[in-house]
Length: 232
Image (cartoon, rainbow, N blue to C red; front, side):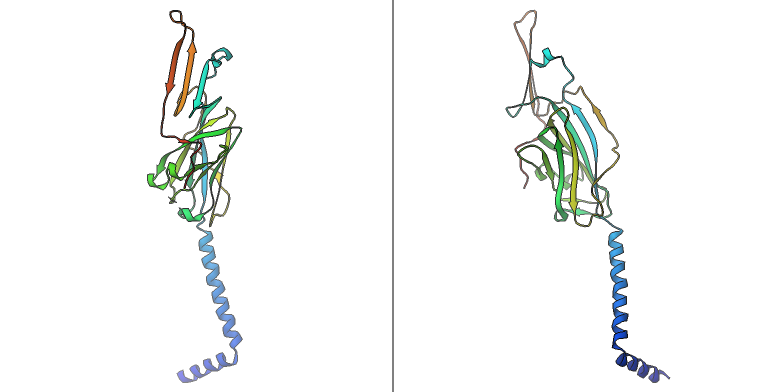
């Protein structure tokens, strides 16, 4: 009986090559569908959270404001504020530098970016200030991290000139199944009243009963990349 079955199988294959081809094609389609499904089940996704948007100076009267002189690298600044944005890999796969069709881009409206600083990078080697590029107009901040594994994140801290400045974030990576979205931040603060002058020079001239003028100068630096900085 065994030889007869073998002969019968050979006869079927020889007489119906289309049947064999169709069977192989069906098996290949099933396999390709499985592979596509597995990849779709593990998309690459980046999301962001707006953490901080706060004025560097408390509201002051016009009279006092006229006596304030604010500069950034010698350039006069009118309404400085700090904006912080958190970027996180919320997908199912790691995102490497070569995955970016369009880098992580922070678009600033109603303001100009003076400088940036990367902080709280997890892990630290994932991204640094050297991976950040600011355009000449100070409207776009582009970041291309080296590697973001699952749940890796970092915070982009920006000094922006413009009290009404707002930001939006976008990116395009290979394998993503949707645009960047927003995530709920662990901590969020919006307000006024901070004097956190990282790289900002402030001079205040006021009358004093004993002196003709009293001058107070605050000048701090905190590793900020200038607006003229360009990444690699």
